[in-house]
Length: 134
Image (cartoon, rainbow, N blue to C red):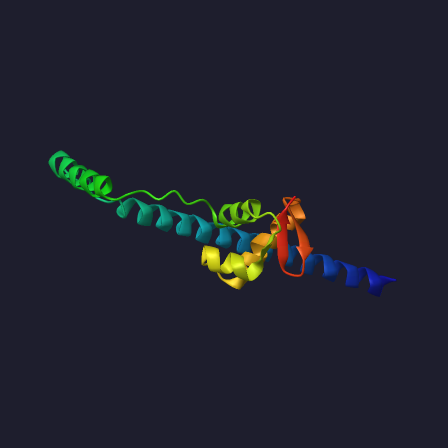
């Protein structure tokens, strides 16, 4: 019985020592986190770009407006919308290879768009590789 009591006392001493070590490790980790946070905030403050003067900004906007006015804007929807428009226009349905030719997309992207649209209930499968509007 006395031996058991001594063993328990030794275990409690060892547990106390381990608790102290873990507390010191936690404090060390907290210090490192604070140092890293301070370094990050310093790095972000140094990387601010310089502002242009008002005259150079005006000149840059004039150049930009001249460029945009000469080019025509082509309204293109998302790839999914393009594929769905083609399917909607067809009466009997469209084959995947025809969709690839009309849109210029790859086979994988067309098949993914068709798969998602069938799951959403927007189109239905009328034959092997042929899809029509619902």
